Image (cartoon, rainbow, N blue to C red; front, side, top):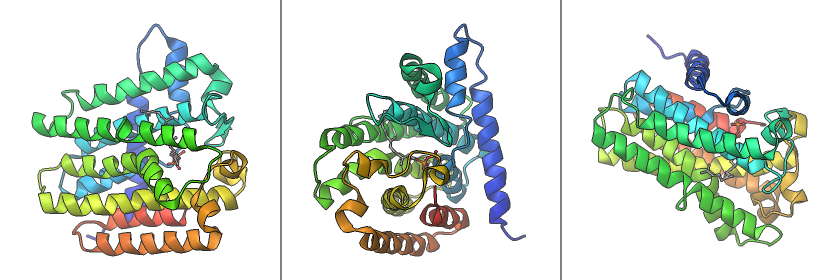
Length: 295
Ligand code: GRG
């Protein structure tokens, strides 16, 4: 039987949506809080991180339910970061995934709290007994993800981004910032999925680590390119925001043509490395999705 990648994509997307919906179907006194959490989590994201988790879980033959739970936790963290990123005190954006941002609908305070609550749900899911993997693996996955989003990852990257707005960064510093802000969670998405399976080797983990770092960087370069070349309707968020806010990007530092060349090189390197792995069609497909996307 041949692997149909389009069916895999649609099928996985449907499972991710259902899982997010079920896990946010929470009985609570705080109806407004739950509504705000659902508003920014069930609103049509590309779900690239959870798809990566499911794809890499295929490599180590993880149980589908385990991969899906980890994938859901990671997407909820991502949704949390988007709510906080859009707040007036951060990027101050009013459009996300083609709709008004969380604070526009619910106000700054509830948006902040909805983000906080999505953050904790991630760890409720990851530590739950529904995850049927050995406890030492479960702890490893929790450590990997906390490491990726905190002071060694996303929050640090966001802080550097914030503090350097208006300055021209050196390319090396820009790369480091994006490695932390965007790359770390993408890396964790790929590695956590792989860790959840039983057919695991340290060598393959290291190879995937290398691939995931290239993919994280590729994601960000393409993000900078489309921010400068696509309109707000296509992007589903405010276009040309980086230039307006006087932020250094791959496009402002290298120029559009060189940034495109860099993305092309990283894409090829990623695809070539993924091709060496067995059962990796879905990873190749997702690397292509990242490279060829326009939103
Ligand atoms: C989450 C611990 C934690 C802290 C918050 C605000 C913040 C600290 C970090 C911001 C990180 C951030 C928003 C990075 C940008 C990443 C990025 C390019 C997002 C867009 O991702 P896509 O294209 O979006 O996958 P969709 O809408 O498809 O999900």
